Length: 215
Image 1 (cartoon, rainbow, N blue to C red):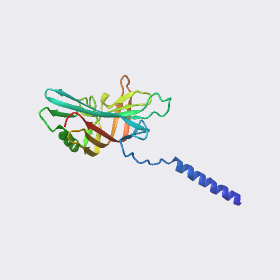
Image 2: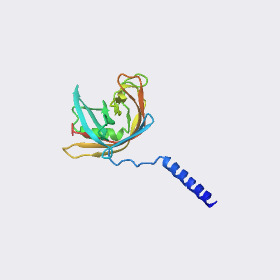
Image 3: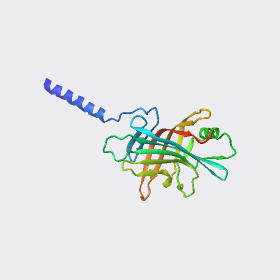
Image 4: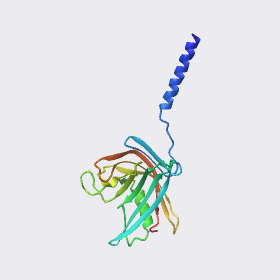
């Protein structure tokens, strides 16, 4: 009888342990640059210094009819896991057709900071909205999957926004200014030559853009 009771106790303990193992463990968000979201039902995380790195910070400035267009972006990629990895997942964030300054403005960097402080809701960039009207600017997101195929928000209709939850500006006179943002968003992704799409849901990211074009 004692052996039967002992077996029952061990069985209950084993079942409880198995159930605990099946529960999803809440992992704290990385403190640095990172992306975390669900893509087509699968959770994805890329964190700088953990399982990935920032490939590049870059910004482009060009002038059209006395107006300065400013387009910053960053790309975050996985580290190689082993020798046989043919492609690494990556995500990039580009502020496209969003920042426009007249050539006569001398404090463009301050204007950029003021814009981000006053516009906490940034449209997800698309070449056309859901009703077919053009969207002039927004946050263009690219996801590169494990097969090396690139998916973009800008290739199809969007009806969502990115929210800037926190913004920290680091300015050094005469040097590069950094704009560090914590954002949340959902979006759809499209790829060239295919009618299918992907979805990013419940995404959180800490990103940074660096202004090297003007002061």
